[in-house]
View 1: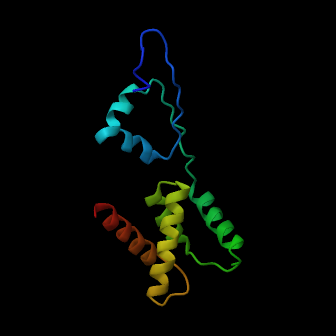
View 2: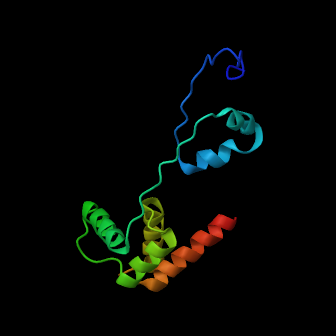
View 3: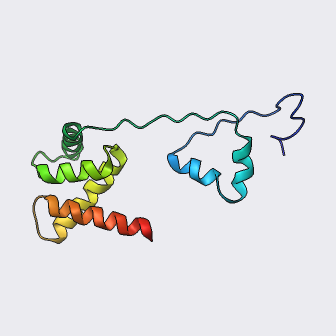
Length: 129
């Protein structure tokens, strides 16, 4: 109601909506679609994609912060995780954790490519549910 009051003479309300990419999708459905239609300016800050080498360093840095200095991911696992995550840090984190869980469940001491593939398969299955 506040956004449509006296539209021709001015705008009594300015609101900044800042959020994750899911906010854009959520605004387009259901009762939020009316609000989406009133948004006059949009700006998307693209997430910086990491290279494979940066993803490897990123994982090592996180493991170091967690107190681990040994190698927990094979190079093949890092490449598979990076490729599926398209270099996006949040997706790399999610796949790395799931890869470690898959490796642990298989009795492995290192997350290899098969652990990463298991994580990718589980993520794909979860996305369709």
